Length: 153
Image 1 (cartoon, rainbow, N blue to C red):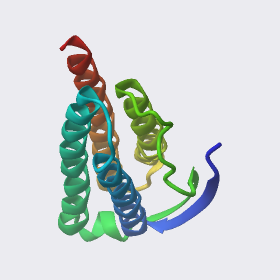
Image 2: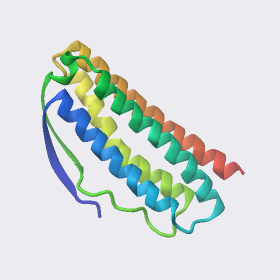
Image 3: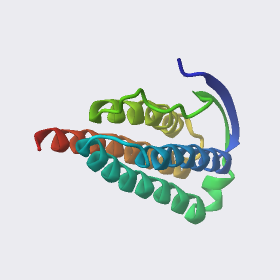
Image 4: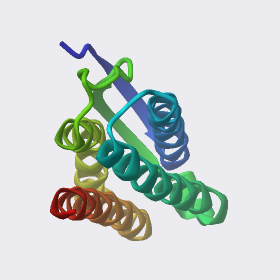
């Protein structure tokens, strides 16, 4: 059972920095999985998923670097429950298990940004947070498509 922790933010910058740390922990877990002994389909899907996850993480890092002060410094007192640890997926790792594991890790972040985009006092920050929510949603959709492609092989 996954443990959760409450995380409180006070600014847009804190939210983005937390998200980068969280996605980095997922990337590390994916790196560990790639060294494991898995079936050929799992290995192929894992390679694809790792590349897409690196792109998502890089995109959020660029948002933090390029975000205007209005977004970085916006007052955004917000508390959310997030997984306390990134636990590995169930063994033996299957393609479906990998996708479900990743989506379960991505969903809290996507929901957080979707909610922040609707409740933000700053229109500019709301647009940035909404864009991130859409980007994570698109990432999850790509995961599902990659899973389907792998299963069709």
